[in-house]
Image (cartoon, rainbow, N blue to C red; front, side, top):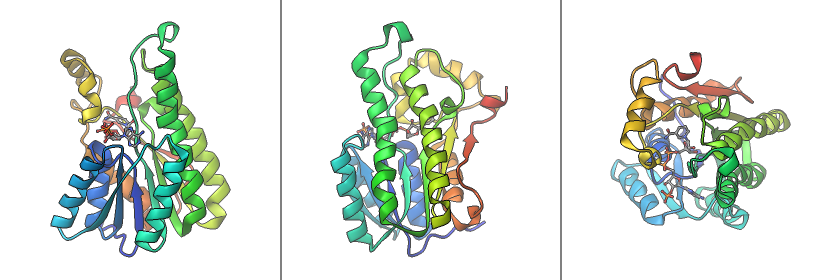
Length: 248
Ligand code: NAP
């Protein structure tokens, strides 16, 4: 299936690394003009350079998605750069501290909720009014949007809440031709997992029935389908890409 996004403008947050970078590369290779947003401007610029080297169109933007003023400016600049806005991938996210609820660091809780939940709200809050009919949004959740994981209360709470937010936005904007969905990856080989000790990573492989971790490209493939017109009857739902993790 050939998914095309010619003439469409996309914002992908946290696109300087991992899953977001794969989505930005794939969208650009499929004809979209992509705003590659990241906390780290240099990383965003590297992804833009890769896209341009292959003949794609992209621009780099930085800023913290947990800062509403930065997100508002991101959307404004994207609309000016690309002549409109059609696609948004709220992908930026952090793992946060690992500790039981009774010992969870208070500042870590606030930070994870700020980036992984509030950041997604700000993305939709400012992008939706700027979007054209036929717009589509993907919010990057996780398998931890539907199951728990000891030690990761803030992350799990944020990803569960993100699914509720996705459903409400989908209902509110369906009649305006804007679709909103969530994607739930299992453990994917990206720098996000580098915080885990090596033995923990081997343990994670073992709990995926498919026998390995996922790749950013596998998450990107599902995301692009949901953003595309091929998914025209899909909104308000949560789509797993998890190697069988949650089937157990
Ligand atoms: P990643 O490789 O660490 O990429 C995330 C990117 O987001 C990084 O470039 C990071 O920049 C950026 N970022 C962090 N905080 C930000 C902020 N406040 N504003 C803007 N950008 C920010 O992680 P990933 O694995 O690709 O994760 C992408 C998304 O997938 C996240 O939402 C994550 O929760 C979700 N996910 C990941 C996995 C997994 O196993 N990898 C599984 C399920 C879901 P810096 O590095 O400069 O901080």
